[in-house]
Length: 323
Ligand SMILES: O=P(O)(O)OC[C@H]1O[C@H](O)[C@H](O)[C@@H](O)[C@@H]1O
Image (cartoon, rainbow, N blue to C red; front, side):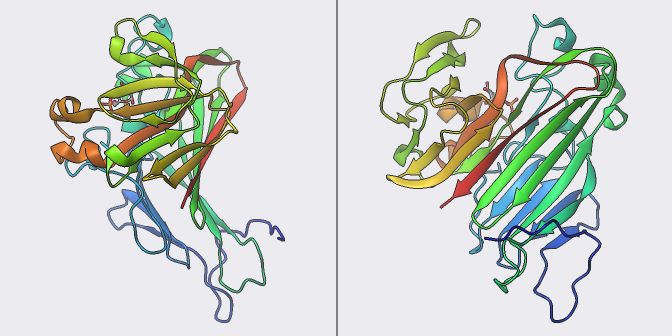
């Protein structure tokens, strides 16, 4: 396989050349979508840089989005891939983030679209672009005054989404643009679409330590059994997978691999399903029995805090392969 450098995004399609990935910015200017010549597509709202659709070449949707999700910026999107930053949940005991709402401000702020790049894995394949990367940026100037006051630090985030054939790569670069050190947590809150939760099992979390958030206010620690995880009720756990980030976490349905997630620098995996009562108690979760068709498997750095000194950067990401 010959790796070619990224082509400049301004290069327009020329007759005779293989087709390029199409990137469109909707007329209302609130979302960016990209389609590969082979048919795979993604759609990302500028609000929260929330990915709300990921489809394979046959048009099958991979993400679950509530039918009552707000996509107009009035509320974090219930579904897709909301981004959690700089705090996971709330942290009343962590002075610097204690004033922020649940999961921070990244998912409720309007990001900037920084542009796209495309690449081909082989110039002789003849079928055009193999992947398209969309970059989004967030800095204090994009925040509401309320968020800026609640978290008055100098920062820059770059979120990149790369759509390939059968895979999706999401990475976040966090940079301290100031002189004062600060701490953060971050997570990619991916809502995966499944057909039937009773047939789902998650491999890759065996014999791993986890915190059970359902025993709040004091989450209890436990070690998972050596068999894959089945979801049979409300679930809200922070796993520290024993295999480390490179060992895949695989969502299987009926014994068949559906999604495989490999992480980089994101040491924890949160597994969340609200189940019947949780879905009922969540106004924007619809249909109410939609919990049977979704599972959140969320790659993050959420145990403790990542500290960045002035001028330092950190990067984390995940590659999801769908079969
Ligand atoms: O309702 P939200 O703020 O979107 O949070 C939805 C869920 O996110 C994560 O998975 C947390 O572990 C859960 O405790 C939380 O309920």
